[in-house]
Amino acid sequence: MRGFARASIEIRLALSLFRIEVPLYCGKSADTLVLSMVHIAFAGGGTGGHIYPGLAVASYLQKQGDYRVFWIGSNTGMDESIVLHAGFEFFGIPSGKLRRYVSLQNVTDVFKVGAGFCVARNILKREKPAMLFSKGGFVSVPPVAAAASLRVPVCTHESDFSPGLATKLNIRFAHRIFTTYKDTAAFFPRSCQDRIVLSGNPVRPEFRCADPARGRAFLQVGAGERILLVLGGSQGAREINELVRESLPELTRQYVVVHQTGPAQEGDATERYRPYPYIRGEMPHVIAAAELVLGRSGAGTIWECATVGRPMVLIPLQGSGTRGDQVENARFFEKAGAAVVLGAGTPEVLIQTITSIARDAEKRKAMAAAAGRIGDRDGAQIITETILEKVLQKTVENHQTNP
View 1 (cartoon, rainbow, N blue to C red):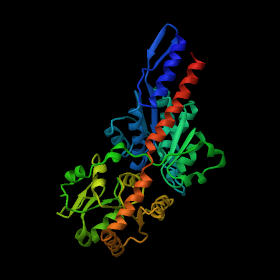
View 2: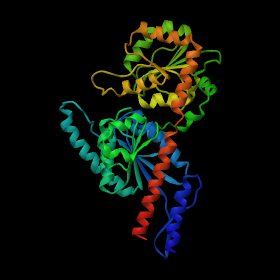
View 3: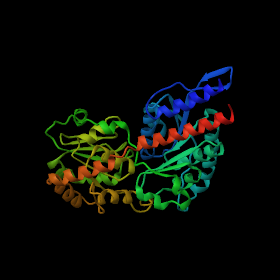
View 4: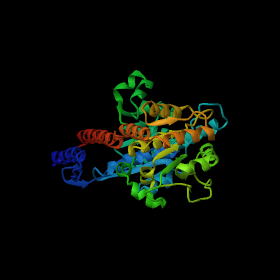
């Protein structure tokens, strides 16, 4: 009977990689067999860029079998609403920001990080996940450390071209380190190289089957109208918002401008200008409907656009308060031919760049093809398969130790 229980685990988890569902039975004795669900924890947050890629993996994972996914994120901010809206359980923890500069807040945030570790450890001890997947951001550090203290295997993913501070802290506990870009491996110590897996940036499956007609219907824009989509990130980007509004008279000569402004920054709509505080579920279809996308170069946004095959004009966040990750991301896409990067954000430069691309159909076609080649790598699938392999290994080891 014990052999049957162990074989059931091995077969079900192995076949889950091929989307074949087999009940998982695990018993502590020959006389008891209990139907059990594999639990997998996710951690990360602070911005949409640290949440949406993780949700893409979580969604792909649940399609492979009967897995329970729950998320550990910040108990303040947007983390909870995004995760709950996606249909996953959420547990909030205190979180302190990891800063590279001197600030009095560093003192108080040390205590928040410590509290986050204790709360996360209690959650993991109670929920007993087989694996923790970290999507990064400062809120991911306490759960990763807590998982390691409980001998829960950890995988972590870095979205940007160069690793952030949270990833640099998390990799010491990680069994697998997923990177979006091949060149990112060079930023890690030699001791980590055999744990690195090139995955690309995971995007939600909706982006791989986005429907331009559905996007136009949502926007109420006719099939004959050209669309410029402006994305300033989930929190809005004041610089881009102001730049676009100053340039609107010229931009609307070429395009219907659809503008995700961020909360509390929405402007007055006109026939040629459509501001939205936030576009949630319809975003894949809106991007597919756009001829050109203008925005920041956060990893999530540019990979979503690449998956849909949209040419981009990027204005990366730079200067004090940023480590330059958006500049690195933008330069990669520019070098690949998928984007044009603007260093100087002036209305004149923006208008000239947008107008030039709008008038050159061959350039737009080449940029779209380059973006599509980048976005072709299915990060959610690659990461999910690796997670399930580790879950299989961990489960078999546990039942060999405690049959």
